[in-house]
Length: 82
Image (tube, rainbow, N blue to C red; front, side, top):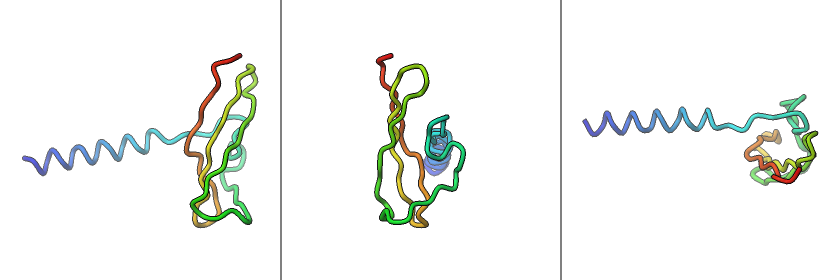
């Protein structure tokens, strides 16, 4: 029984992780081109991208550089000020 509960929890966590992926929005680096690659950034490094979302709020995104030099959007925050 303990094994079944553990397997269920692992399955639930894996599904939640996939669902929680941050999706690009207009203004995101990967919005129009999901295959962006960087030339000189080291794999594993992160960088910020900040832009205005059109209604006066600043959006700050964090990207991670993958081993193949592609980038993954990992976090986004939106300012409350408008």
